[in-house]
Picture 1 (cartoon, rainbow, N blue to C red):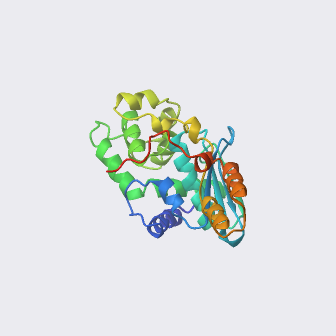
Picture 2 (picture 1 turned 45 degrees about the vertical axis):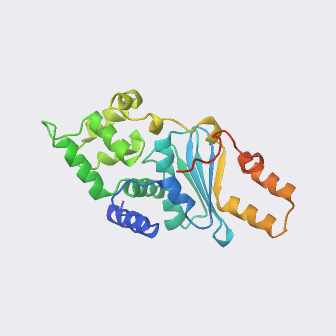
Picture 3 (picture 1 turned 90 degrees about the horizontal axis):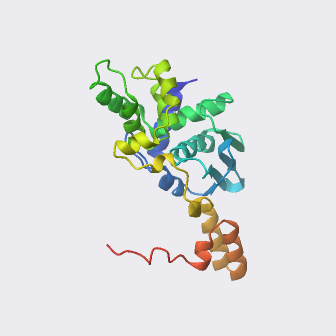
Length: 252
């Protein structure tokens, strides 16, 4: 695997999308800023974490398994960015297990790791934490702090750190088997990273599809009823019936 190429591609895409080269990234917001991209959140079962479909006239779709944890969803979205921008295949499917499957899937996983955890920033964090330990190796608590900082799943953080001098393969495999949600909470972190989407957000569509439906009704190409039907098909009942659960906008 050409790690240097994947690292460069990740850095170039961050720059193209208006992000700096080292900070944690709000990948969901970034995805919604990509022109002609529709993002669908849907429970895809136990074996798939995501899917990328390239359509005609650059109308593209990324589906994310909302039944998986928030950290895994973020990683899956970055994985699908690789297929969207660097893969010639029209349809690509991301398996549940990281670092498995065909070469191109393994490359997409490594790209996602570099995209979410830029190498220099990760090395800086790992050096900071490991330097406090007698053996200069990362503890499980250190790994949790790193995954929380970058907003990635425990699995993806451990796999990436196993490619650094700070976490050997043996200890890394032990960490992979650890359940870390409760430990993260005792360290003062929210458990959100280790939980799936809330029930009301497991079915949702954002991006180009929503914009296109608005355009066709405004141009008189479909009726208001058809417009609402299209929104309902995209799980956006909130846009049809309104959503007053939060009591309106808060004015700062």
